[in-house]
Image (cartoon, rainbow, N blue to C red):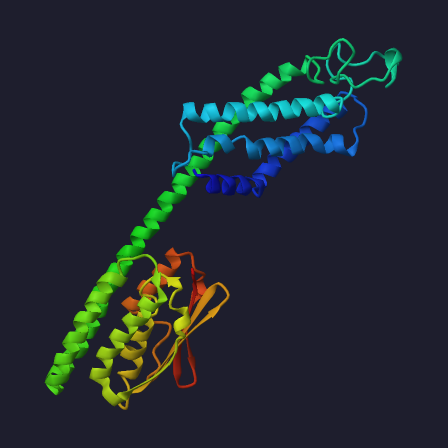
Length: 376
């Protein structure tokens, strides 16, 4: 992964309950062991340090294994190991320095044979200040204020960190690939559903033109020209997973151009669609089926025609669409033609809530309300 996804994955680990659950469990076991060994009661910081240390360990250990500089979710064994070794060495040195300067508070006072103080010896034993069993003593100082025996712990810490980082990174790689596979399946299903919409729209348009050919051949000729424009727009618009809202507007306008020729004065339109929203991206063929449904099952079914109202507005991160029509009231519980069924399935694939699409009656109006998450 590149730097930004790696940092994002690291941040996500800090928010996972299992990270803090494992750290809390380790802290409870560590402090419980101290109590069973009869060691002095620790202070608050001594109680928290084991859990904080493990949490930091779980969050940071996978980081060098995940940085690849490209789209791969995990580095190879050689590269990952080469990156993880200095990283874990630096973390280990930091832990050793912390233990050395704090007198091994995390490990407990008097732990380990030959490292603790004899019975009856206090914090000022042997004629001078005592720096703890793991802290420095005269004659035992190296170039760093770290007890020599702590280097054994450091080697174990380093080896365990390399192994744990690889395990955690590999597990997240598997989760990443599984999520990518699920997304690919959903995208494929969405493309299939969008592909179904193309012939469905054309079928309805051609069905409407059969009436026009008998009643007004001149208008039918103009409608065929509009039909070719509609087909071209469908092929382009329906091939994408997301498209600008302006493209959806143009598709709806071409569809309405056909319906105007067929319905004439029987169709009355009212639009509230600000052009400022046209740059927003939405999945294609979301509004067109609602308009088509309103015309086919509402306006066209009324002897005197009816009204069509299209309103589009933005509310925060959502695009609110309202398509309303007068005319016969459909059986809303059964009003699930191919267009609406297809739309509901695609909304489900997008993870939209069940109420993202609502159909209901408001007096003489049949209303469809759609709520979509948008991208600028």
